[in-house]
Length: 218
Ligand code: DX5
Ligand code: ZN
Image (cartoon, rainbow, N blue to C red):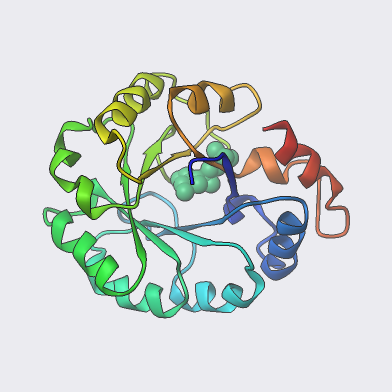
């Protein structure tokens, strides 16, 4: 399904109220829930691990889209799968054996995603296309919400969509998505847009209406 999907990142939600925040954005039209896992090593920030994912899983009615910004990644795949991830996305830059990582993700029963940092080209993934269900193009350097969109990634996405051809692979964009940058990416061939600050700004669990306005504006 190549229709546009909006995936709010709970990195920009109220950390003391994840359950209520997830129910609120889903009620306001979120298609997937994006969960940013950071290890303070692969990226210079720390978030949460499998127990938190398992705790929020019952609150997600749509799709739990888990973005692993961790290295090494292989030792944790089974734990995130057991926590209920539908999609597990690992970074190409996280280790030398990405082929094995993708095999392990599918072997654990999840859809396999592969994320690329802004400085990473698409040439190295040509031989992995039959092993991925999603390619996440980072349009900021991973680690933090609320950063500025990197425009050089537009051409990368256009070329990636060409390379993918008619294979059933989602192109997800992560970082700096706003009502201004979103159409640039959908025109280039993306079908999933992650948005953190642009979705959660101006609202709260007690006043979730702005979330819906923000989602529709993207
Ligand atoms: C960045 C994360 C993103 C982030 C996006 O490392 O992977 O998912 O939350 O946040 P915004 O939409 O605010 O750029
Ligand atoms: Zn992310």
